[in-house]
Length: 284
Figure 1 (tube, rainbow, N blue to C red):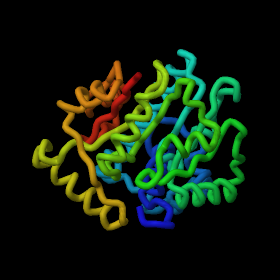
Figure 2: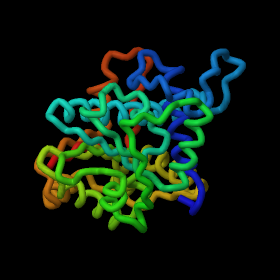
Figure 3: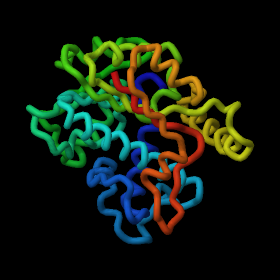
């Protein structure tokens, strides 16, 4: 991400999440604040629709993938809360809205949003414009993943390393260096038993079939033009071993087929996730 600039990718992700609320029925992921945070809550008639409501095949795949990974993360969060986890960390939060629709009281769950300082300042300005209040159950933790440690950023804002936590890390690893990813996973693995992290990762381009590789090349070109190029990819066949070596004891790796089976069965609109990424839940 460019220094002192908000994330263009975060805005695009938020727009696709908002489009899902309007274009897809039934929704995979319900987010009643997705439109408001973008200032789009008055869009209601066809003549008001802009490019962000594009319903091309590529847009449908991207929309489905983003909705499914958010749904999976929040499903796993709710399961972790039932097991006693009281801290939720949203890494690279972007315009994620969970903290502002959090159904749990402060004694049950506290949310920490971690992001680049510029992106976080931009988000707070959008929240103010949309009259979305900042709840007491939320702490902002500004961190530049490439120059600061996650632990320092969290502890400055009240995170308790003696307690378990659930982390979501969506749409981030592909933009970071392998060293930054390793440091974050190492920190999560150092937390008490029961802590966990849900994150997605891009499959190594060399492992993609020709059709998927063409889609990847187009997407990689677009994000590079936005100043946020892809940096790191993983081999699905070896990532489980990597996570076990780092100290995680239980790993669920959902590829495209697994996500489709879990969230898109029985649909009549053929909405499906893309073939470029996996989503993992790794538990300490």
